[in-house]
Each structure stands twice: as C-alpha cells, then as structure tokens.
Image 1: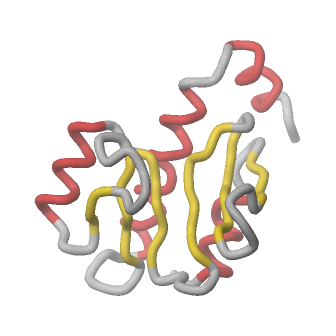
Image 2: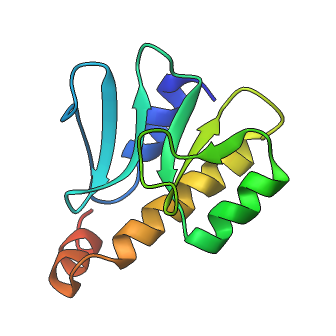
Amino acid sequence: MNIEELRDYCLQKKGVTESFPFGEDTLVFKVGDKMFLLTSLSDPESFNAKCEPDRAIELREQYDEVTPGYHMNKKHWNTVSVVGRLSNKQLREIIDDSYQLVFEGLTKKMKQEIEALQ
C-alpha cells in the first residue's frame, strides 16, 4: 500500500478529514475531529493507527511490522509498516479498526451527523 492508496482509503470513509496539525510532513486523518491515523510524507513506509489495547499487543506479538506507536501513547497506538508481510487487506483491516474505535468514542450527536453524510 503506497501513500496514495492509504490516503484514498482513509478519505473514502464517512466524515474523514485530512490535515497537517503537526507540520507539513505529518498527514493526519480524523473522524469527528479525532485522529485515527497519521503518517509521515517524507517516510510513508509506515503509519500510526489507534488500536484497542489488547488487540495492539496481539498484533505486535504476531507481526514484526507492528510496533508500539512512535511518539504516541503506546497503549493505544501502533506503528504499522506497509513494507513487509502484511497484505493490503490486513492493512485495511487495521485502518478500519482504528476508524471504528475512534468513531465509537464520538458523541451521539457527532456520530449521527457523520452517519447522515452522503
């Protein structure tokens, strides 16, 4: 999965926006103004994704490509390499899980507004 595929996949999800709140190198994807994924444009071979803590540990133990989130809360974030044995399907599942985890944490009103989007 290259940076364009990653970006396209994230942006096709309801309510997702992209921004550069940490500088011009770090592309951040949010749902309901909450981050669910970020990546470096200068080194797009990995991304950080939010993860349920038990699942985060499980993925780290199972795949060398998944490590504790770089510069993030390591309990809730993983850094995922797109170079290695993880398939695009597995990478999309990690992205989906991150999006869903953040979406579920939004207020009821915010979720309804996003679900109403076309």
